[in-house]
Image (cartoon, rainbow, N blue to C red; front, top):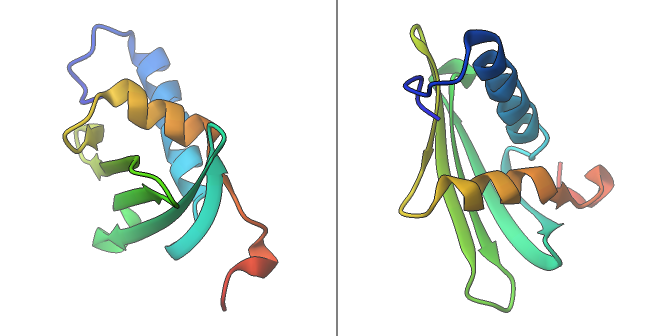
Length: 106
């Protein structure tokens, strides 16, 4: 999703808002959670004063992974999957449930 979509402005803004909300639900740093019946260890890095994010999720005990960057710029938001289909990244973000906050080291 990079602003070149034929989607109307309000739909695009809603989609960007939802993607950002899903990204915000993932703990910064290293954490664990589940998606699509698999367990993952997830690393989330925040850059540029919270305007860009890098997420890398690796399946525990398996070979699946998800990697993405998300940018907020003056021209809009941009989701950039890393060498995988955007649909895979969106499925992961929609389905991912982090482990309880009390399990996260402080």
